[in-house]
Length: 227
Image (cartoon, rainbow, N blue to C red):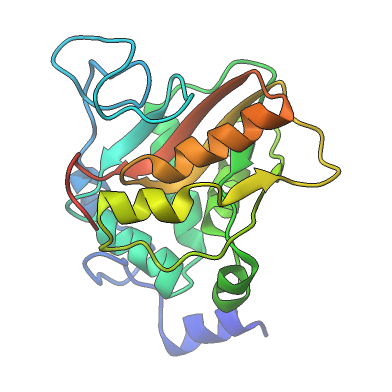
């Protein structure tokens, strides 16, 4: 019996947000997720009063980014349970939420998960962005490529200010050696906070030869807020 199965016997599955026994995210908590209504910024996906190609929250060379829900209500608990409690099944839940509100990328787009540094990946045991990307691949029929690596370990960014996030992300990502650069890519991550991480990932992809970079995330932190 696997460790995960053993834990399910000892600790029966329950909603990561409200604790109701049953699904990893119960129907009520999923219904309570705050969607981001249109119109959206054409660059970073921020909700805006009127459609614009780019807004003040845009960072880097990213076009057509989208986030499914706001980082509020049940969303923070779901994200924390995935990353801190290793509840991997929540990656599939997040992908379902994304796929329900974000149209599939055009044919030819490759899903590129935001990478973790090796120390963080070993400590957690998985990369949550890769799990979400694989679930989206099954939903959308688009391939996944681990085209990037993190070249510099960063501290946990939760609670960090925008300037600290930008400093930690700047130059922290590079193309994976030997991996061909996709012609068009969508970065995949769990949460967009300031956009610094996505912007640096996009920089690395463009440097490798990728012509078009978009992004999709489960949740978006309100502009100016931290998590």
